[in-house]
Length: 303
Image (cartoon, rainbow, N blue to C red):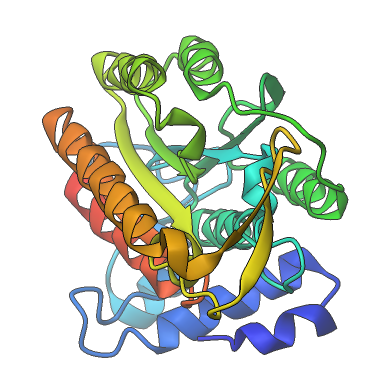
């Protein structure tokens, strides 16, 4: 898997995504996906009775087996990648890797993997409103559009923008008419209030009602946001969505904070289980296997 320390040296997001995926594939080894490679995405078995127009005669001559060349308009799976780009996703704002950057790089790697499999990829980006939403397609031109949007998002500076995930997910759900896999990257922190949480899960249930499969990647900096690992000294904490500031000593609130975050995450997991949504904690301090492997596992179950 590509070392995260290499990220600042690479300006081309598509190249970085390719390196991440290739490193992931090499590292699969004895996993359930042993033997996974780009080759099988280029052909499919010939079905008796169909036209021989696209039969690969060279493969037939070499192997004695009949394979049809697969073209870009053919697709096995439709996948809609959804990224929460609200202000809280820029945390930690003084680090090379924050939650939004991790989500963008994960999304880029998924687009590359979908491209290799001739699957259709779509992209949705939201804050308090949907700021980009594309249909799922598998053409090279479309993939270039997605990488351009991800690179543009990567370059944006944070604004004090709150998440309105429920409204945005409902809007995105209404725009996707064919059964798809939804992959959502969000920290979910704007939904700690019970009423907002209920609204959000109603939107996620909307996706399930429309027969979509959903993977929710809960993107966090585990050390700081869940375990509250700060030095024993005074800090000024700033709400990245409202700009509100508070000064306090980290040890004075640590136990209470950790307890509340544990309750919050348990609630998220239980609600996801209730609606048959795959919940994955995605720690930005870890590599991208934690994203790519759950995706492949889900894909294998759907195909």
